[in-house]
Length: 323
Image 1 (spheres, helix red, strand yellow):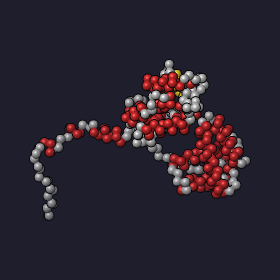
Image 2 (cartoon, rainbow, N blue to C red):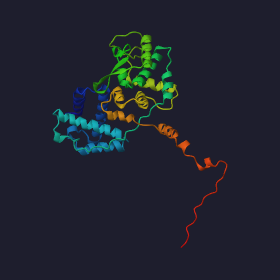
Image 3 (cartoon, rainbow, N blue to C red):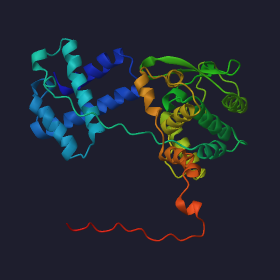
Image 4 (spheres, rainbow, N blue to C red):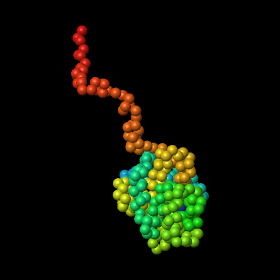
């Protein structure tokens, strides 16, 4: 069986049956295509079932040394390749003894970085950046408010249909990773922004996309990223802004407001609470503010405070006496 058949079998049969998104399938296919190109360049016309564990380890070394990939990128490649072979074994197309990924040692987990979030003042400038005198301006204002006000992903926003937005009940119905669905509540500000955009855009069929372009075509995920970056530049924000950073900001601001982790987990659509615990972080500014509020500044008086205007002599430790 040739490489194309192996990869197509894995993507179109195994991954599709798991309900993975099209973007995820494309990422897996790209990863396997890169692995295939390396095999052909280094080993020649060798098929996947003829590889050995040493070949996979050599590819990991290639990712680190030649491509300069970090732990996170290398880990993603290894996971895709390992799952690729496991799926072929599970579907009966490869004998378990011939699985070259089985002897691979577990890789060091990538260090998880704390998310960078926007301050409330920065969010205020961003939300007010789009003009409200054009349909596209109302659309972008509604888009920004929905991303920050619900923590929805860019892919979830672009997948919204007209029937998914219930302005009477103040909810939106989104479809997340793995086909998981959830209903997100809308506060008054987000509801008003969506209502203003819908009124200016005009009524559409229930199955039509909610957010559309100037040509009345559905917005893409890349289009959402482009609009967020554009308004962040126009708002003169110093940090790089993306829809996912707005999602981080949404969760972090809820933590600071005292909302429980279980509630935030359900709003974000996380399966495990450990994913949500990432937002139990404090920034350097939070720590600095906490230190400034400590009562030691007014409780611990110094000698200079007790004797104002008096210069104290320098105290020196006497030298030790010789026996």
